[in-house]
Image 1 (spheres, rainbow, N blue to C red):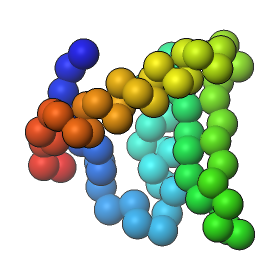
Image 2 (image 1 turned 45 degrees about the vertical axis):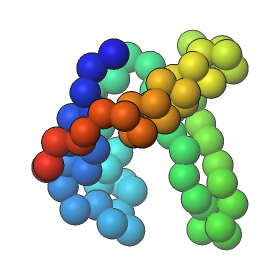
Image 3 (image 1 turned 90 degrees about the horizontal axis):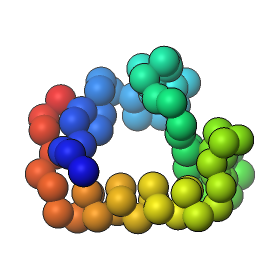
Image 4 (image 1 turned 30 degrees about the vertical axis):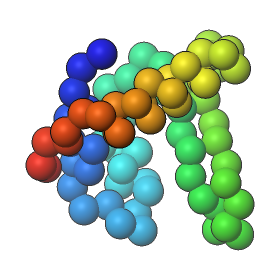
Length: 73
């Protein structure tokens, strides 16, 4: 497991579509988690991920956020 690089590739506050544009063509499998316009937590994943794969990715990401220094963008 490597370092998380450029968690915030540029200022995307309030502009999730810009974040998605920056992520385009960079992932083979992916999950997206966020708050919708009504304040509900929503998640989506590529259809080739099973629930246990999604949980594994979430836990790895959580571990990285808690233990690995992030690079400045």
